[in-house]
Figure: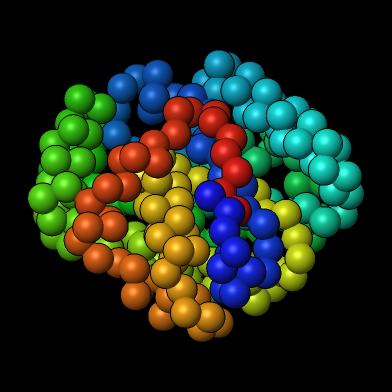
Length: 229
């Protein structure tokens, strides 16, 4: 997805990693509210730990192939248990201190809040949400966040990262919907940005119905690692 305009608004290279298979995934329930998401019982399953370790190993191989030193790596992650657990496993694989300066928790990378109608319900409900998104990405589920709402806070997350790091390789550890949406807006902004340096303004400029309604095209499996820029 890299393009000639990428450097006009991003100073860092970005990879994304969806958390490994979690206990909620195993149980087939939606955990999107922060109140539940930070609970320790909603971390990774044993398969999820394996997926996170495999992703960490793949990331290491990519860095070595590109001769990128580990000191140039930053890992930013959501505050939910399953993303913290994933980032911790990656840290172990990469032999980096999880409590060191290369790791940063960012609140705006949290899971998309789907609202009380869907919270603690079956994963079978997800297609209902995505059908709504396709019809109107600006319309949130009752008590939840729309695609546009998530894009707005992800713009803030990007602005935070870009303000703090320069010339780094940044691994963003987050959740399915936020990472789909993040890829969607970055991909579009790369093609359309006019050289502005204000990330929230750039992202706001591409938060259109036609762009946001297509976020499912960038879906990630649990534990999937992907280069974005």
